[in-house]
Length: 372
Image (cartoon, rainbow, N blue to C red):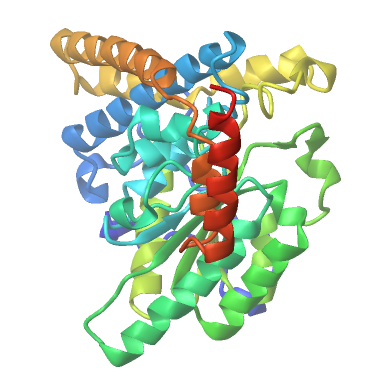
């Protein structure tokens, strides 16, 4: 969708005005731009719809598993599927991605399986996958730490590109509006801007930082604040998967070509609580939730498919069957995750087990076996 490279953006530190919000499909699923001109094809939209439906199915199953005591905690991405699918599908598989802790939709697009995404929440692993295998980092549970990690990684990418001009990898980093209030986030944005790091930050502004509304966090929109640091910024309807995709494609192309780092603020909504430990009814009004339910990103794409005649009943039936299979796989994969042996803690405390750790492990094993 390179035809949309002229999307409204800030011009970096010289432009501190709030931007218009990019939208290509309205809340009723009506396309607001010529599909052919924008490079929008039926296959593209069907692919987005499949990714979003399967992500929500997995998310729902994980939520139920937590309520059944199979997971210690779960952080839902329900309502944020468009922001994740549209952006992750806009970058190359070779571009490294740094998530926060609710990027299930993005992770699944990178090929991660339910078993891998559940291990951390079941308490059987600190990560669940090798980031290099998927170009997708493990979840960062401490707010905004991944922004610094991503920026540091991007500086390594820049160093590699100076040695080999043919390399054009970039970094994509996800975070939320609550994280934007952390010092680490502001340091990362400033550091990325001053070093011209090849990175695109994508903020899923889901309106709430646990129980604190975005309006109480900052008097200035995040994309305006980021422009003040010197990043090129874009404001997009985060429930419009086509708009998010177009904005991310354009941002990635500019950054890949050597432009300054970019920030995309995607306005979306967290339909569930912050986590399964949170009760959002204590701080959110039902009317607000109902309003955003009507803006459901999956329903919007379904309406678009129906209006354009881009998907038939056979497609929807096959997808429904795929979702049922995913639900069954998720349940069985979760229950098959066994707790690791305590001896593994000694082996994995450091990259290589030291003599002292090995001695402690052997002593523990001998003590445990003495009860047999």
